[in-house]
Image (cartoon, rainbow, N blue to C red):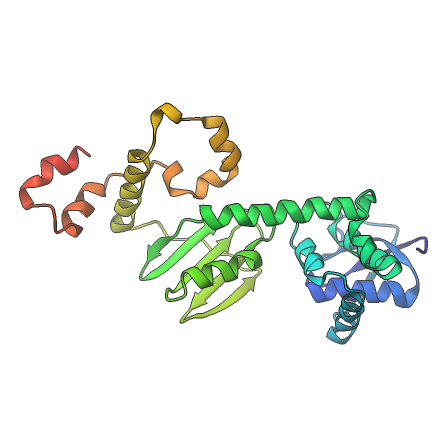
Length: 275
């Protein structure tokens, strides 16, 4: 590989934009000191070069990777991770693919390859967990959920929930990375750089949340309670968005039971309130 140059590449933050940085690196036969998606906040003595996004350039690089039987999907997943110096790691990784071919993917003793493999595992594992921990609430006939992941997992969740909730109108909002997957009339779209805040739940929604918590508590086997195991399988950072782990809005559950269950008589109010 060429030596590092005193230059910082700056791009628009898109995947194609980052791949265009790879193209620039080959055209100039240089390795930048860093790559960033925004202009550095601190003054730098290094040259800052803005790389324009050109899909023809990015497609050329990706075709070259595919011709070497290397995984483009792995690079796309690496782009979703939160690993420090992610962009420069991806650049160095792609250059290794062009130098060594597919065997570079298995060079786990290499610092770059090892760091990206760990980051992609963390990202895909987080997405796997969230497939079970996303909790939807209803707002005017639309299902809405908020998540707070470390990685940009929305693209990894989109197909899963579009398949499971194909007939529903719903959206999932990532409040950390300001991304959302919106699914309306069986069509889905990922939106980026958006700010959104859910309104407070109405009484009906609070009631259903209370019922869900009652069910969660009812199926618990107290003798087998293991908080350490639960935190291992349900990381505590997810709890703020998980209905059963928040106990602040249970007051409406009795009213919901009375209004929505045909099996309960008008004279059963005392019994319901005691649930």
